[in-house]
Image (cartoon, rainbow, N blue to C red):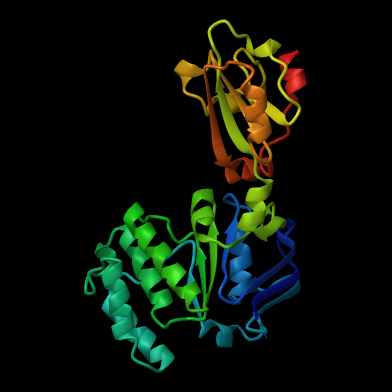
Length: 322
């Protein structure tokens, strides 16, 4: 069952395009990651889905209901944490759960207090006395207390310490295991990679990649660090065609500057950075005859794939070396 469906969805702010031609399908029980840098259009899409903004054109449906026309009905079965959480200063977790119980017509205190305990919240502490992280935790608890069929979270880990981030991830995985659905917006790749089954990458308001995590990893290159022996010269080595050279000692190019940042300064004079798409067997066979001092081959890196969509084009290795 498709829980969220958008088709050719567009929204503008005057002459500025916020989202354009967005086509998404999120299935029941899926943890869907919506990934992109700040200003890419993630929050605008979420506000359209929540019925808080009206789309300029296209369609958006949740539970097969129109997000704008039937927004009030949809919101009863959706838990939502906005990117800019704002709570009444007089609110406490306990008061918030009481309000939520009246809205939904059933007592949510027991479920909510269990969540509050997981997130280590003091139930009667006033919001105005809370840290930013605790205010974020209150918003998360109130979004999840009524056991919604869909949770939409806009950068929810903002302000949370690592332990509370782990707690949130565990709660979301439990939801998905129960057949409920999660849409998780983030600009942090590691969060999405750890949590999500399916990822959409957004750039300038448009979806530039929409795929499963496993399919994306198949496209992602591996980083290879090659440490040379003192007598070896990187520029004269005939690197195999199936690797892409990102940094060689002495390389002078914008690409070299950004790639060299991945290597400790003390090692840059003897370390080469390469990228390999696919398995490492062919490279290892070639490298065995080169007598390098050391080789480190990383796992497929989604970060490299992610950066391709946002970094400006750089000169080729041939241009850089020459």
